[in-house]
Amino acid sequence: MLGGVGIDGRVSLQTFDLADVSQALVPVADAPRMHAPFVDLGSDAWGNLAVAWAECGDFDAPIAQDCSAQASDLRLRWFRADLTPHGAVTDVFSTVLGSPPAIGLAVAPSGITGVTYVVAGDVVVRVAGLQCPAP
Picture 1 (spheres, rainbow, N blue to C red):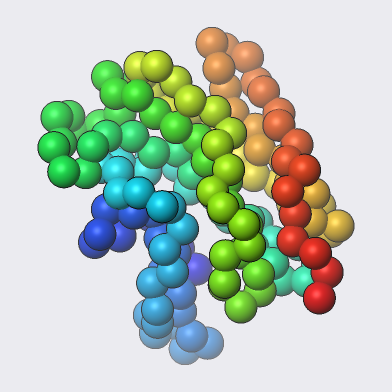
Picture 2 (picture 1 turned 90 degrees about the vertical axis):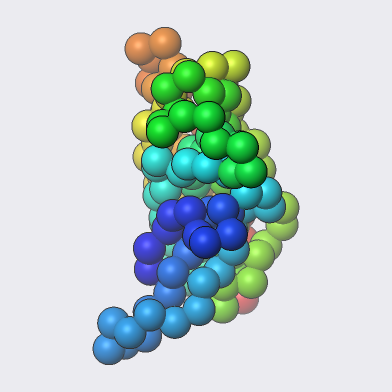
């Protein structure tokens, strides 16, 4: 599975079958954005998937080639093992202007999710209370 900006401007997941042939695109984000320079995936013991991503830019009126002078957002969303969304997109962090923070995502076997990112030279860890329930 790969994550990135799809043809509709939303962060999406590209799925593949066992022979590495591309399959369905699964939308992750609610709104289109121009760039998503960081996308990270993690799963729990039941195969539920967490997706964290940074995004910036206006999809309909692009003004820059990158995120360096634009407002950026860091978001998180959970999906069940069959890739149906579990809950809404969760806002993790927003910047007024500037490149989005690099991110890291870790998922414990229990499903508790930690997102790390850098703000003003400091590493920040947010533990999300959101997790998919066991089947």
